Length: 219
Ligand code: SF4
Image (cartoon, rainbow, N blue to C red; front, side, top):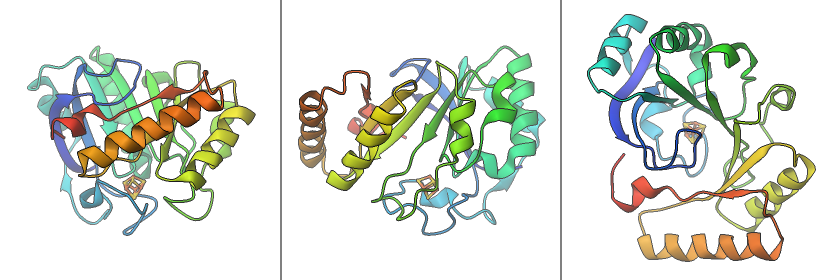
């Protein structure tokens, strides 16, 4: 399968295995939304499915073992672009006792991978990311209590879009995450505005997420 990178870092986002916990990250190459993709994409290097390194599941397993973390986060790009290989990899890692999370852009249905994945973080892209709603609604039939629907909020349009989804589909775990840039001061202001809006709108069933890895400049 095509891999962009494998590395160890802290998990900077809200997730079943805990923000701040150490994890091995497997970044798969290629994205459904293609080159250009989301307006605020911070992993442009993983968008092009023609790039990346070809690795077997066994090679990835070996690389993961050498990084000594129990938690594994598979991300991209879009992991489901290589669903067959992704499925085999998750099974291999699960059989070896790892705890597996998969981040996906929400355009694919996660159902087939449920037996071998502990937690899915499924994006629901707002209007500032991409003009049409690309979310795969079949996910609403299979997401579990422990899975998350993540909304990245860049502006008021995104907030209103995410708020509506979080109210209509209240039975799911929603996470609102301010869209961060290189400007730390602006990030704090944006995060604080989001917090205030959520409180004013009584979105107390929605989790607030801040990407702490970006505060300390790590991956
Ligand atoms: S889905 Fe992810 S990898 Fe693809 S363009 Fe959007 S942010 Fe980038």
